[in-house]
Length: 221
Image (tube, rainbow, N blue to C red):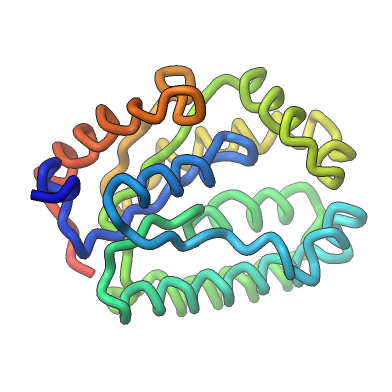
């Protein structure tokens, strides 16, 4: 019996790790994939032609960045589904519209026409019964101070130059978003309750919780 079977996790499951910047999504994605023998689907930061430009000028490049992310995530979701599942995914497509695009619009960094165009495209692509939703969102949460510390520790230049107020608002918006999210089951994990870097064995209680949550009901894809 392999690990996935041991914890009642289907071999074709699609599990998506969500949470604000710096919360540890990539580490969780890799550890889950290693433990379960699943493939990873990682957020593409390298090679993104708009990311650095966006951090330099939010209002100029916000629409471009959001459209780029939407297209890339949609293609990746389609690829995962066509492959037959068995993936751990770093960040969900739902966060793009539910958090980032909405925040940019409400802050005045995306105009109304661009926001309506983006939202219309998102709904046509994703909010349909034909879109392959994940089996579960694994939401990583922690205090604002804990998350800011992690952002500072990893030291990405474009993030170090970002005002603290941006990270605070993003943290609040993530909490509001997850409290209203209902497209698939959610498992919430507090980042202070495990340490996958210093204690790799802490992945196993998490697998147990995933299996129990999935055992209630697996949504149709």
